[in-house]
Image: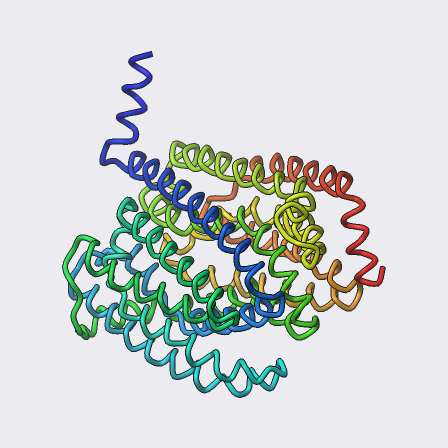
Length: 459
């Protein structure tokens, strides 16, 4: 027993890749769990203080702000994480200078988009909300590269504490402002408070040298060459991840759209955790353990992949089975339809969960072009599936389109994974069988709830 404890202690306390990956995984999961509990409590309180339309309007604001961030992403963070010069002060200061300039440009773009977005969604309030919400882009542009350096070396302890503190500050601000203002402005202003809190804490408490304005030509060229494909990839990634909000926000009333976003919020927990784990961990792991370099590396990655996928599928299964009941317990009657949204979203995200550990292999190898091709294919298929799904089956058809799009994208995933010698068909086949069983049983258990959504969708 003592020897086992000693082995576990060594695994978590060493300085090797495994120890850092284990600590980072544990901190990421713990931080994510705490973060989601806070988000859920905040969502429950805000759902009672505000009205469904507020969540619908804020969803449009959020998707525009996220779109601006991703449409201008030049890959500074992944470049620092994978570059051989990722610890060079000149490289880091050049990256920070680019990031700072980008933040200013994004805020100006948010101001310029306010009027056309308000016209498209027929909501004059958006013309006031977007310039204010866009200030968060200006603020985060000044975040230090110490944050990226911590991710590069899989040291997430202090980052997790800071992120948790920032979230608490934002939630308390949102609840207080919602009680006082009874308006969607509470959500916008609390976002600015979170951005300011993060900026202060990252600069004050993360270790490392401070940044200053610097423009080293070789560093800038490396960042631009790597980032040109990241720029295109993030545009496609935005369209893939946010196409539902862009399309449904126009197709549905703000009240129904707000209910949909409550359901999406609950069902998205597994995907959010998966994306956080793969983004934070896999680039450093693939960089230090290239799967094509040796059978031992591939075996280690296989064990990691099975562990991550099974854990995420277990989370998705819980939401798929209990989604309707959870919504009925936690929300009032205005949000009843969100239960069916949780069930269907949890089931339809299963194909994406199974393949999500492949994406970062190309970035770790410095091949951002193939990563772009994958994200482009996923974006095209998701938009096409959403439009066809809406026309064919209303909101339920749109939810089904999530799973359909990823099934059609799988050959492209395999193409990228094989090029990086990371494809694991045994993992994919076994997890697909598990996912199919979860989906079929969850829909059967929640048949009445899903049938209600089908009738509301005109089936």
